[in-house]
Length: 495
Image 1: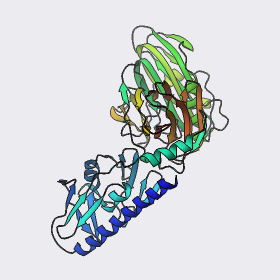
Image 2 (image 1 turned 180 degrees about the vertical axis):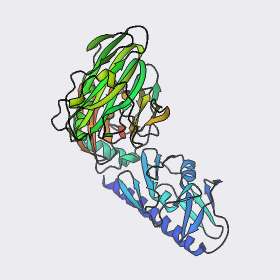
Image 3 (image 1 turned 60 degrees about the vertical axis):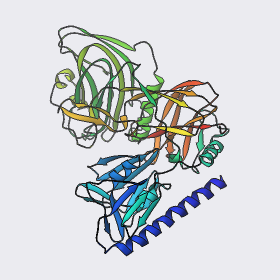
Image 4 (image 1 turned 45 degrees about the vertical axis):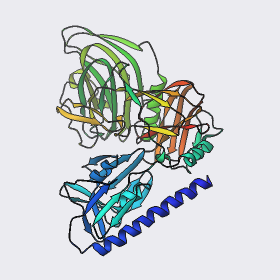
């Protein structure tokens, strides 16, 4: 452990030395004229918006440089924020701010990020600070910048630190990894398989705060269907939410309810993270091969799928997940009404759909089940779920408006991860979104809860495995908690 921190300190010192050298050279060249050129491993990076020098700092287009280094970049226009990934390293930079976020750490910028000619321009020093092993050199006479690609370096200290942290911990226990920079673990990309039946996910979370009664979402589907709702009652009075199926066809339809988890029996419905975790854990525990309920729905008829729903007070969260199968295409409506108006539901469910709030997600999405396969080959490694990069967001359609829809975090998606081990070691899960996480994962021994877990600093032990072992875990992003999560592996000993 001590050796690892000495290595980190040397890396930090080297990075800061580069920054000071670059800054001093730039300050001398600020008033001179001429184009600034940037080279990566000897190859010039071509920009559509040219780098420039301002206040002694070189500003470069962030996306062009970062993608040239092998990273991935997304632009969030609603919050004017750049989100980037390099391996498992997560970077967030808001335009106009002098603070950037690397994982759970802040990075200070002398010059805030700016939008120039439609491109986000960042100080060059941000590259070296966010990726310590990316070396940056400024040549004032030639007005050129040389960048060397980041190097993985020796992973032994990182692996040793993780191994010490998980040693002696049992499956389901938490390991303290606060002394480990978990996002520096090398990333592995799992293989995605289409071998399981697809599920159509109908997701209702917009408007999230429901201030007027009505239908929050409506969509169609046939075959395996998942209905997910997440709404806060803002009607000013007690309210209920109904899931209504309508058969628009000319033949009767068969409906099989296979799972239904909801917050109806949760005492504290104002703690959204706690309720979201409870619903998700209940869903994971309901692994059944036979339907819970079976209905026949006549042509042109409607049925309430959750007739026993209970009333929720103003300010409480209504959240539920229902899996079902139907042999004909049906129309599904989510409708929230005050308790006193909770009558004639099938007729009211045919009414207009409330407008989206423009900030939260709703839509009909294919691929609501994801089957991932990964091999842990004896090197410390990890994969991300729900990050929007290596695990892309689901894409679908908001049926009431006809607009394209995306599902950030892939909430409501059921992940099955099949892992094989070529070397002995320990597998673990680390939440790395927001400040606290509540959820869980299903392993062969049962469902492992993870409640009010601080992010980045705790690892849930998924098991200790021998060479040749195979295992399957299931996971669903829990409502009320931020994604992503890392599922990682550390070998029992170095290869």
